[in-house]
Image (cartoon, rainbow, N blue to C red; front, side, top):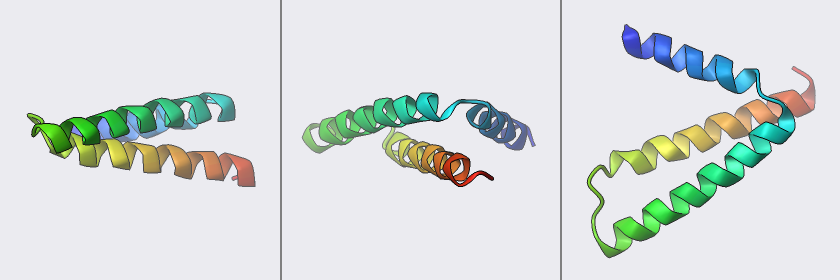
Length: 72
């Protein structure tokens, strides 16, 4: 149950951000994902599930950005 509260608070945090903040967060997270993937290709990283969670974080940010652009 604690995970659900954490997830909903993360979504609320994203929704309270401005479009410009979301765009910069997407760029920052995308760079982090690329570095993680590169590191994982050379030497396996300790937690490969971090790559999946980072991709999902980018998707959540992009979804919220699109919602704001469409006016929802």
